[in-house]
Length: 93
Image 1: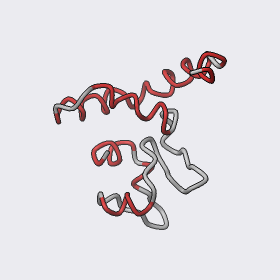
Image 2: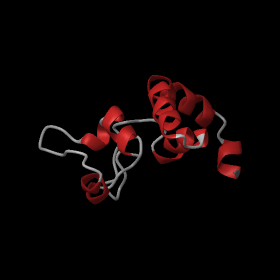
Image 3: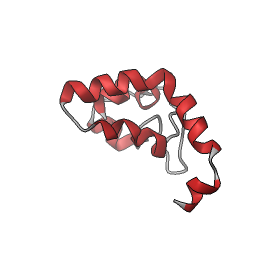
């Protein structure tokens, strides 16, 4: 909490980054009857940045590691990584 209080621009940046993705995320959550709070998870995971990559090789809005991405059927080739695809990864998340 202290980290967020000391860095108020974090929330502005997160909300700005969320704009292109939030509608689709909320639609998928509502379609499944899940709690809407789940739509905020990418704020913590990736800051709503689909190209985010962690030091542990977790990638995308939802920070799937390669093995978890495979389990959920996210394709990964030399030219495409479904973990970075906001539509595909949101469906699987």
